[in-house]
Length: 447
Ligand code: UDX
Image (cartoon, rainbow, N blue to C red):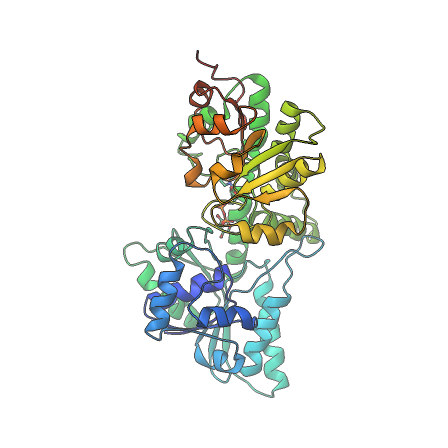
């Protein structure tokens, strides 16, 4: 099939590349000329495991092209995916200007039947606004061309996005138009050969499903983070509690990890946007308001633990910080807890020596010229001369460290772990003081 994807960010690029991989002919359009040039030259502007190979393979055989030429891109695809950003507005609602601009571009150039697919996360009712935008452009041109607007929200985890697209748990398609449903079924048939994972529903339910999924997952995390606070006070270990409750199939094991707060481009933005949608309709979403507030607090948990151990005044102290990206396997720094941790430490006069396997450049951009932060080339190098180690992101390479080397490098044998990576007894057996999230002195130091 002929597919056009508008927007070459995480969502658009993964969508375009994976659809090309399944034999479709895909043109990816972006207004950012620099990004398109990088892609045309074989580069990938983001860090996403496995994406580079797929992009290069499909570019080489001519199934995947990148362009800034709007007219040519719109002419190409019967299916026009919109995968542009929907950043939060000042009031928390999703900013739809890029989505609507993409819709107007389609309306301004289309001459035959198109299925316009909203892939970006957009509030309920956006498909109607996309339809109006396209219709407005067609009217301006004095043309009558048939088109359908479909909602097909993405469920791509950064760092695992290619796998999520190629082997989806479910594909949600919201459509009110038979012809569009048939074509969407055909497009996704090769991704769902063994199990029918396609769920067809009305457009508004599909749009809502995406927010509901992210809101539920964010709720689980904030819930566990709050219980973790209590676990520390009552002398329990939240990781034991997690295992205990996760084995109940009604609860399940996923997304129950207490930590330093959730970040990224989706959860914080989508929870805020859903709360905002509720307000617009006079429905107070109390649970989600609390989910958001609990997460804002949670991002300060590591700073508080440092203060509890080293005191309010951190002048003259240096902290090694492992992990900057909002989660492993990405260089994405959007809403990353590390930004809050660094701000909390630096504000009290501390220096930070940070290390991240891939996100250093993005972190430099996100932090700007904050004084007192330097970047190390390796996890071990970040420890050199530091008072203590603070772990913010659970990269795999941090999971089995040489604890003796950590103790030898640090001025004080203190590890503050925001992701509960280690067995407390093991860390303590190496002579390190170990502070984690929601794990009181549940496991005493063995001597
Ligand atoms: C998420 C959704 O999972 C995906 O379906 C959607 O399309 C986009 O948003 P992503 O933002 O890439 O994907 O990250 P995800 O792996 O879901 O993690 C989000 C945040 O939650 C991270 O900061 C992570 O560290 C945190 N998290 C996750 C926890 O703190 N505890 C957990 O148990 C799970």
